[in-house]
Picture 1: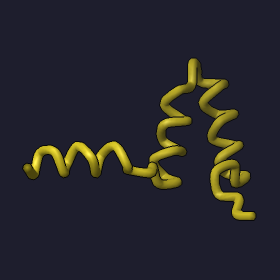
Picture 2: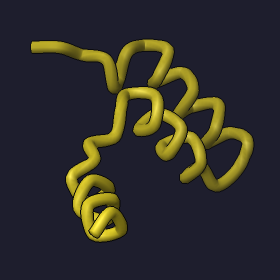
Picture 3: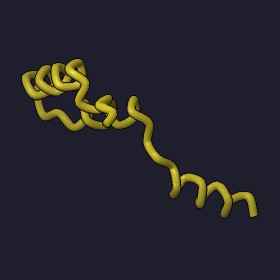
Length: 50
């Protein structure tokens, strides 16, 4: 029963801002792309609240 509950909980998990930023950085292809993505994150790409 607890395994099913854990599966449901994981399926409904909304990634935090930090998790999204790390996933975005991990998707970089080379050093230049990584630096560009770091610059975008520093400018607040994932932290804009409307």
